[in-house]
Image 1 (cartoon, rainbow, N blue to C red):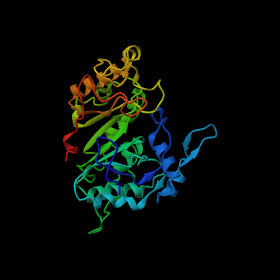
Image 2 (cartoon, rainbow, N blue to C red):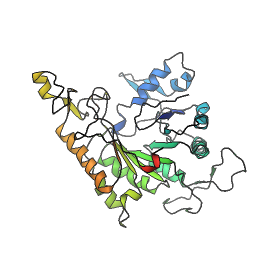
Image 3 (cartoon, rainbow, N blue to C red):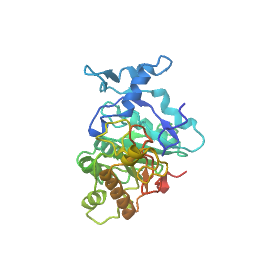
Length: 329
């Protein structure tokens, strides 16, 4: 069982899916694709067959997804075996709402999350249309007595899901659902669907951040009724890309340290040798200021660079590792 998560905002990784497909620019250097390739070629890994069918070598070089998704069904029960409460990342090696993931897997996952409320679950999706529509079709009513997996599917309500079945849908208070948005274009496409999704906690991951985003402006255009933003959006995570190209990185080689040698007291890079690009620093400051104005907790993961921690995690000399109340243990 996986007891440890490499994601700093989670304590445990619940990975019961393998495989995905690229949907936007943020997927270009996907860490999960590289990890799946390594697992597919690890003869000591019992789940190796599931990974072998989801990745392949490109003719031009590199690794690509095949479009299939492998289901590691034996892992679905993991949260029921973890007695002490944990903050759990859900299916980060895939996308829980990928079209190749059967509905029953999603129903089963939600049922297990309901059955193990001692944990806090963090779900992230690149396909919020399916997430929103599917979660509006779930209900706890009419479940068989004593059933360990009591989620039942209703008929698809069709049309705009907002306002459908409000008396039957019961969002789980310990589950956060979120979207990724690497730039303004994808924020505009995915945010409306996130805000339509029935959830007690909603969040956005701006990782990898590839451009400036206007979070306040986007929320203002959608929430025309003046509803406070922090009542519908509860958390923001942001970070730079690691091991990508220099053009997409938020950092560059520190010019001062390159000229005079590494300086642990360097004001530009703090001794890391990697300094934030001026435009990237403006993007991050704007997001930080937007979150402050909206009273939404911010978790700044890292600047990224050649390695995950090349640029460090200090923004304006401060660490931002904030969590919403609903994700605190």
